[in-house]
Amino acid sequence: MSNITQQLNYFLVGGAVRDSLLNRAIVDKDYVVVGSSVEEMLALGFVQVGKDFPVFLHPKTKQEYALARTEKKAGQGYTGFDCDASASVTLEEDLLRRDLTINAMAMDDSGNIFDPYHGQADLDNRLLRHVSIAFIEDPLRVLRVARFAARYHAYGFKIAPETLSLMKKLSESGELLSLSGERVWQEMQRSLADSNPEVFFQVLYQCQALKSLWPDLHNLWGVPNPEKWHPEICSGLHTMMVLRQAVLLSTKTSVRFASVCHDLGKSLTEDNKLPSHPGHETAGLPLIEALCSRLRVPSSHKTLALKVCQFHLHAHKAFELKPSTILKLFNQLDVWRKPEEFDDFLLCCQADFTGRLGFETRDYQQKDFLYSAYEVLKKVTAKPFVAQGLKGMAIKAAINQQQLDELKRYKQHYLQQHSIESNCSN
View 1 (cartoon, rainbow, N blue to C red):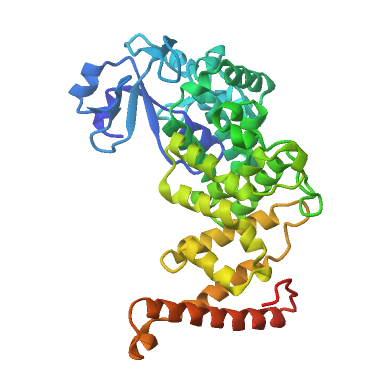
View 2 (tube, rainbow, N blue to C red; view 1 turned 60 degrees about the vertical axis):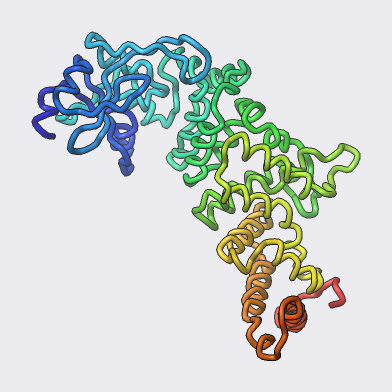
């Protein structure tokens, strides 16, 4: 460290200490400074960036240094706190305000670990445990613990029963509704980027948080599907299985988000129609629109989710569709201008097909057929029709007719080559 930090009593804290003990790659390093003040930090050249409490950037490394602080609940939500960042605040007091014991450890410049709340023991026991009863004062911690449960699932971590109990209490208090949509999406997207995002949603369902944060998803649990196509029966379980398959197919959070959204319309199916779900594709569209508006979901994620929701059954029935219907599907998906999104759409449909009990290793030939059909049709251009002297709408009609002819020939060839029977006459 530089001469600047030698004048401070500082400690590496939080995730960097946790991940170093787990031999996991450290992404960010955050430091806490004990016994200092805003004036001293500024005098040393640090740049203050914290609005609610004193956080500073090192003038050279740009790493974050925060004054040790305590917090006292003063209002609703995750911002309703009064902070004391005076020089008298101790390291133990600062660590006490943190969410989990595994995040409440500190390390000095010599590598000595300060662990007043037994975080190392919980690391060894693979346990996510709250530091103090103050955990219940911050509703954001429900999402954070769910995210940690997902991130460290592969390490064997579980949530301590007493911590899960506090998460349920927080969920039932109504305080989750005080969280901004942007903050909820930030935690959700971070989990979607990790290797086990299904655990994030399962934990939120288990502690009743989904009721407030995403009721349409919560309501899928217990909604049955036809056993022939869904041996797992439960729509909520199916959705988590689809997300698991999406993780195996793509690292894009947009693909994973769309996979979670694809069957939301089933939450609205009337009891007398179960286990079938007629019209669930279009029924889910306004639910996705409302969620994306509330959480400020990026437009790229919303667009893909809407397309997967509306058209995933078309993809599953690709071999039964008429060429004119397939061409209409391609136009509705805007495959000509957005081929990469079409790739993502097909991945979501594959995840939906394989995200079923016993279907995990089945081939999804519809994906290969639809993409190869697109490759055939994109070779049809306006050039020869312009050379014939056609203009305007006549060119468009000629392109459309040639695409239909090419698609009819290609479909027949594909079905014969792969010994696939079609219920469609053409």
